[in-house]
Image 1: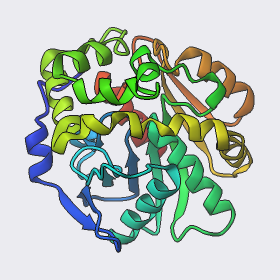
Image 2: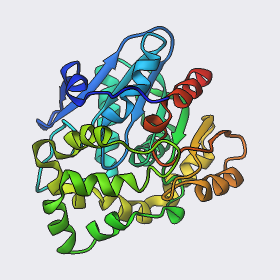
Image 3: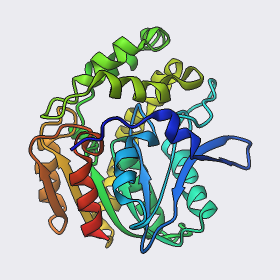
Image 4: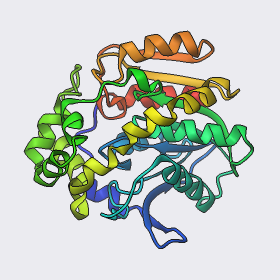
Length: 291
């Protein structure tokens, strides 16, 4: 079941910042624990705060690390910047270096799924300084042709109009849009929407939402390479999937089963796009079994 309500301010208060060589500051959270290192990659349009309830359940049982991608949450949000997966993957590798992670399990959701695929590609090419032991995928566009962007995402992608909509985004608009992908048993509450919005709107982050969505074009351009790297890697996978997700739900998982036949599948029948928020108990249990 869900927590009574994780607080974004609490999440920030126990976090840290990593400064990149170019001066960019990246917000991160790290909890030492027994056993494996686990590195969590969050989705669009939210932040590492998505993992708060899962961190609560896993605290002490593993070493937990996560961060906000550039442009998200409490990380820097440069306005005149072309956001891309290569840079976000560089940041993931740098965060692993900061916390001296030499081998880990990746847990990736939504936007973070493609970062995981890029990191797998780098590992196969011998370009990664840490070892990926296993990847746990949560709902995301692991096969880009099957990704179904929401109506709001489609609007944000439109030239000129997308920028205008981004600048006019409010909490009420955000709550309505995000609520449509919490279509399962565990509806998005007003409190949850408000806490998630704080990360999105921090330092005017809603104004660059349309720029962050460049990832959809990137997936179209490079998706075959990333998907091939995923399919050809010897790293084992676990797919923890909300079956009611209208964006990357049952249709995505059904296809993945035909391509990733060795993957362990955990279906969450009453869950939609955000398993880690909607049903953190099941996600935490799946992670513990994987480690």
